[in-house]
Length: 162
Image 1: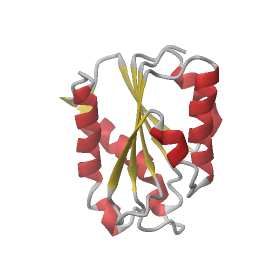
Image 2 (image 1 turned 90 degrees about the vertical axis):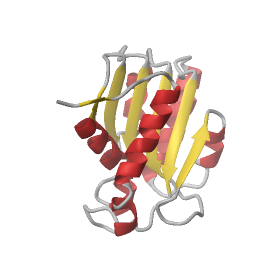
Image 3 (image 1 turned 180 degrees about the vertical axis):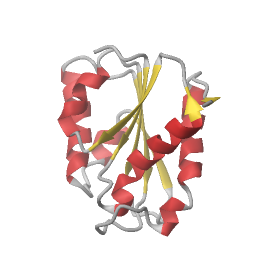
Image 4 (image 1 turned 45 degrees about the vertical axis):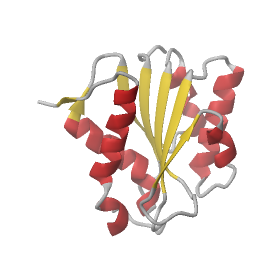
């Protein structure tokens, strides 16, 4: 499936508060920006290995997810290419196994995007609940701006949605 040269992928479980930050960021991104046909913004939820088909034809992959980085709640951590699989060795949720597995499978299938960036957000709470914690909820727009900045560095521009 060729979906364009850039994929913005938000992953996470929205039933576990901050675990769903990736999904919440791509929801807000879709509300505030539109992109050319070469860019797809995807809510990957907890699809795990089912996401592998979305990487075919993708040159640049930007993933937004909750990561346990031992940082202050809400802090953003940026990882690039080879840093990502080793960083995900410390898991906070079952879908992170999927992200690491997706990247490994993509490498084996020779469809790994040439550029991969993970924007990880340190969660404050992983309790059952549909709402983000106050610490992360207050910063969703900051995370969206971080995504826009990454895309800009790749030459991808966000235009305001109508």
